[in-house]
Image 1 (cartoon, rainbow, N blue to C red):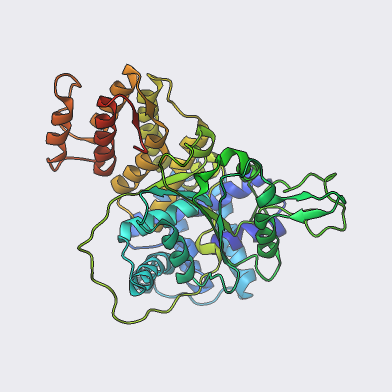
Image 2 (cartoon, rainbow, N blue to C red; image 1 turned 180 degrees about the vertical axis):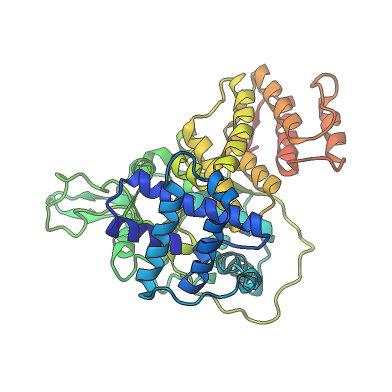
Length: 488
């Protein structure tokens, strides 16, 4: 992606603090959005890689006094950011002062990044369908955005709904297969009480024996592979307690930060654990590793702790459409993508604020409203959950894949509802308030036959977050039986 190249260029060529680099990148995004609105065209400056086109946009911006005044904000961040991007393109193409293309041509050209994301996801769906499997377009888009938000996703639901298959097919659709080592499945065993199977251990001779995950991370970290996405499917991950065997990964993944345009983490092993000559000595989790866990919730499995749920998007697979028998007749070829297709864009809330301040604050307001409902029963969440909901919504807005209400509906389902369980009386109140949050118009009281009231509301068309409302109704039915859970 060009914005990642721009960030790398800034680090290399400008003596700026990391915070200033983030601001310059955000400034270019803001100018792009304002110009697009002013000119009535589909425009993103990061899609302009030709200096001819950029010079015209550059002139349009500086000729527009209203936009110039709007973006001054007491400093030169916007003009400096745009000037830096101009230098970046000039360096990239090694040309200066070339005649510009007319602005009407820019208006007619399609946004290459948007086209790439949408068309790539549509091609992925066609590929999967040609293999004899059907997943809804919005569900595949949600899976993609969840992976892009954070490279740790949980797929939950009844057996046989295609959870493990989705991981393999999605990976295969973009060229990651078991044959080339970019797709790996690790079957979790019930006796995993620590991380040795995944990370490794020292034998009686004090020799390090790498675990399965360590070996994959080592391969993915090599210079020839670092730009290729690597998928790891932890199959039936809750046959053992996840926080026992995956705690190191869950902790290290929280240390991610941008350095010179790359996402880096803390070391996998402490400096005194391995000798310097070991190839695993300075190993970190690279930005091209994506872990997807599949789970079946029954009497043979363990429930998830809040530590695990707060760190993942939990996607439920429970709807089965047995009438869906329309498959692609022609064989579809996989498409080649590099890791930028899935790479996370935001790691802290400051970066997201710079990218789209107004949208972030609007989303944060909705998140605060939900957290206020949860707080009544001490089920409220912290900054991590808030941030990841915001990042998901912002990633979706940038890619323009899902309607905003549909996207937020997925986030209620994936980040809020999985943490709610219990039999206390306050649980009923929380679920009723959340149900009312999901609908529009007259609210239900929670008195009398509240199940019937919910069913009546769900038949209406004015349901803002229908997927979540349906799930809440199921959880309320469970509460009537004495205990409710997202997993029931």
